[in-house]
Amino acid sequence: MNNEYFKSTSEGIGIYEYLKKYLWNNISNPTEVWDNYIKSNKTNWLNKPTIYVDESKEYSLYFNGNGYEIFLEKTLPSITEWIDKNFIKIEKTMIDDDKIVYKDEYQIVIEFDKIEKLREFCSKVKEFAKQYNLSFFCSSIVPTEYPPSPPEPYVVLRVPPCAPHTCSLYFPVACAVKV
Image 1: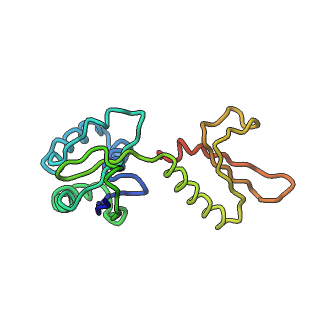
Image 2 (image 1 turned 45 degrees about the horizontal axis):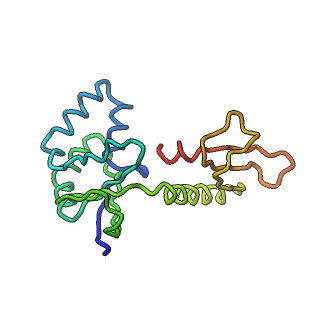
Image 3 (image 1 turned 90 degrees about the horizontal axis):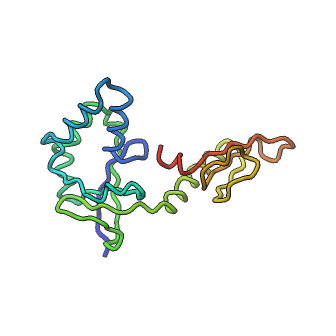
């Protein structure tokens, strides 16, 4: 069964991850500020699932309707103390129950489909390449001419396309997807 869920993001990453990244890059005592923030009543209503300890996997949090309302009322105003609300997006999506690895009264967590993320990333790079008349391909094979070998999979932009001498720009998708 499909149900409707909500995700708050900024620049393509989850809002909590973005806020943490912002704090680490912009204030002198980020650990203290972050620890105090997640213990405050602005955020402590949301359980932190134990599955997050498995760093070999990626997860994505979505609010159900109840969690979304509390997020808007309690948490979002505090986030906008650091992040301009014009950079915060709320996405509504339908998610199959069989994709859910954690569920409570406010949220669900799904294991992130890395292949789906790769396709999404490649699609965005392809649009960028088309906009600037660049050739593009996305591959899971490491090129032998690239020293040292980039992590798999990777994205290549060739500049200019069809020219006798081209410059190839290699973007490791494994890194780019997480940034």
